[in-house]
Image (cartoon, rainbow, N blue to C red; front, side):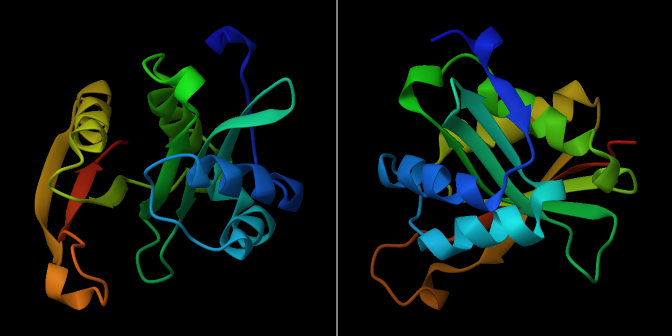
Length: 162
């Protein structure tokens, strides 16, 4: 599979199953299929799907918090194993922040666990790409999670990007 054959678009409800399947084949936190269908219906402007031959090979789910219109919060990024190491996640993030719906966005935020070095590196590269700050602070402590073994979540705040 070649990255140059990958097409980026806004997700539709029909892409929900593909995003959900990709998550289930990965180490990402599993959400219900409904979450991915809902993202395609109500948050398509702030989400990205990457398709190769009409199959979802990557996605970004994100939203603009109602109280902070200058932030796009990245909920989840998934990349199929066939696409890893090709810069697909970075390209999807750039696609996201360049969307008309993100025109007023000045900051990109995400929560990342301390052990997720790949995601940390991704967001640090994004800050370098935009020649801006990458602020990291505590967000959700591990004692908030009902299941055993969930790490704390750190907020990565990139910006200002404009």
